[in-house]
Structure formats: structure tokens, C-alpha cells
Length: 145
Image 1: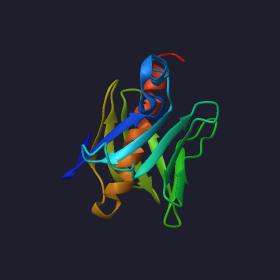
Image 2: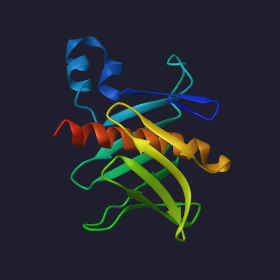
Image 3: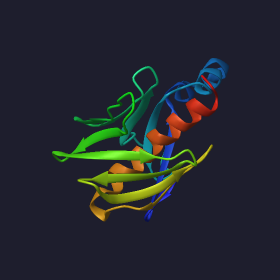
Image 4: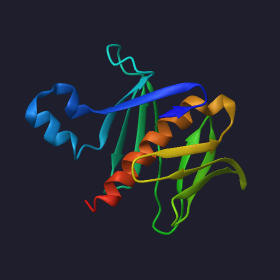
């Protein structure tokens, strides 16, 4: 995935172990290691996971942790630098991220990709990882698991 000028690569954690068992369990994994660029020989910059029972995306980058919160009838929300954001989703896969009622980012989730078309430059790294979380969530729901 490319966001801005940065390429992001995500690998399911079981696939990193190798072997047939790792390859099979990777098909259903909801935990991914995220690399900046195609440099899989380096340590991942973060881990992104999706927890379907809570409908929660968790991004762990070093000591910093972000997670979305789900409500029964409302949008996903998350906190970033002490501000609350809402992810407003449509049935078409399009989504908008709003802060205080104003849209700050837009994109579209598809079966195998998430495209973030607009976003604040200072949040590029965060949105790159959030897009991977949204992709994991979309794959999980499309597979009907």
C-alpha cells in the first residue's frame, strides 16, 4: 500500500513463522506486522490487529497504542493527540474521518485494498496504519468469519 510517498507492507504474524501451518493460519489472521517500505528484513514499525468481537482496531507502535472504539449504532471512534475522531462509513465502502464534525480524511475500503485519498500530512503515518486496520476488518467481514 502506498500513502503519500511512503510504501507500507503488512504481513500476517503467522506467516512470519514460515512453514505450511504458518501459511494456513495466515489466511485467517487478524494480527499483522507493518513495515515501512519493502524492507522485510528490518524490524516492523508497528503491529496492527483487528478484534472482531469488539469490532476494534488496535495499532501498537513501540510504547504508543491507539485503538478504535465501537458502539452499537454509532461510528467507530478513536483518540489521537487528545482529540476524538469518528470514522463514518457507507455501505459502498467509502469512509470519512471527522473531527468536531469536519471531515479531515476520506477514502474507500475495497476487498483487497484501502485507498485514503485525503488526509492531514502530519497524520500520514497514523493513517497508513489505520488503513491497514480497516483492510483487515474489511477482509474479515467479506470472508464472513
